[in-house]
Amino acid sequence: MPITRTRLALPVGALVAALLVAPGTHRADAAPGGGRPLPPGPAAPAHFTHPGVVVSQPQLDFARGRVAAAAEPWKSAFDQMTGSGYASLDRVPKPRAVVDCGPGSNPNNGCTDERQDALAAYTTALAWYITRDERYAKKSVEIMDAWSAVIQDHTNSNARLQTGWAGSSWSKAAELVKHTYTGGWPQAGRFATMLRTVYLPEVIGGANANGNWELVMMEAAVGISVHLEDRASYDKAIAKFRTRAAAYVYLSSDGPLPRTVPSQNLDTPEKIIKYWYGQERFVTGLAQETCRDFGHTGWGLSAMSHIAETSRIQGEDLYRTDIGERLRHGLGFHAKYQLGEAPPDWLCGGSVKRGLGSITEIGYTAMHLRLGFEMPDTQRLNQQNRPAGANNYFTGWETLTHGDNVS
Image (cartoon, rainbow, N blue to C red):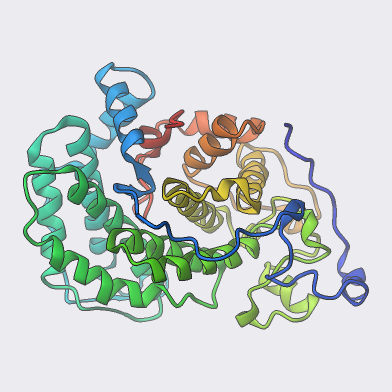
C-alpha cells in the first residue's frame, strides 16, 4: 500500500466554522484514524513476557545469530556499539542522591551522568547477551547497583523528562540482566524498589507540556511497569499514551483540527495553532512539534515506536490501530524533508529545522516489513542512517536489535 499523500486541511479562517459544524472532532476521545476504535479496556497481559521492554528474546536471538554470522548491517552495528564509551568495561558510574535538571539540562547536576549511565547499563546488557562475556553483565549490574544505592529524587523544571529519559534505559537494562543473566544479581530487588519509588511516581502522572515529554515519560512508565509486573500502572500508562499519541501526529480523519489532550484546555482553534507552533494547515503525518524542530519531534516518534513495540511483545499490537497509522505517516512525512526536500510555504513558513535522528528502525520494521505498508522515504532515510547508534538520551543500537528483525 502506498503512503497516502497528505491533503491540505482548512486554513485558520475556516476552522471556527468547521468546529461549529462538527463539534468535538478535535477531542482526544473521538474515533481514531480510519474509523477504527482504540483498543478497549485494560491493556496489561495476564502474564508479562520477559525480557519484554522494546526488545524480546526472539529479537535478541536473531541479532545474536546475525552478529555470529558476521552478517550486515548487524555486525557493523555491533562493532559500533562495543566500540562506544557506553560499552567500556572501565566505566565508573557517577550516581547522585538528587539529579537536578533545569531547562535544556541547565543546571546540569547529574543529568548527563544519569542518562549516560543508564544507556551504558543497557549497552553492556546487550553486549552480554550477544557475546556471553560475563564481564559485560557484571558491568551492567555494577552501574545499576551504584544508582539504586544512592538516587532519591529528581528536581528542577526538567525533572519529569529527565526521569523519563533515564527510566526508559534503566528498564531495558534491568529486563535483560534479570531475565537472561544467570550469574546472579543480588540487588535486583533494590533496583526494582528504586524504579517503583523514585522513577515511576515522577512519570506516571504525565505532563501538560510538549508532546515529546509525555511520550517519553509514558515510555519509561510502560517499561518500568513491565519490569515490576505492575498491571495497574501499565494500564494507566498505555491509556495516557493512546491519548497523547493521538494528539501528537495528525491524521486527516481527525477532522479539521488535531486531537487535543483534555487537561491542556486547548479549546479554541487559536490555542491549538499556537500549541502547534503557529502551523495553520494540518496534513496527515504532521506532528505537534514539527514546526519547533525535527529533533524534538524525533524523540516523540521514537517513544511512540518504543511503546508500540513493547505493547506488541506483551500481546497487544498497537501497530494495527491508529497508533501505527500515526507512526507510519509521521515517519514518512518527516523523512521526506529530512532527506532534503524543500518544505512548501504553508509548512512552518517554508522553513524546517532538520535533525530527526536515527529513530526510524523500529517503526519501519514494524509497519513495512511486518505489516507490508510501502514507506519509500522512511526506507531511504533508514538505510542512510544505518547503523543507528545512541542519541545520548534514551535510544540506542536499534539497527542491531531491530534492523530487518521481524521476530
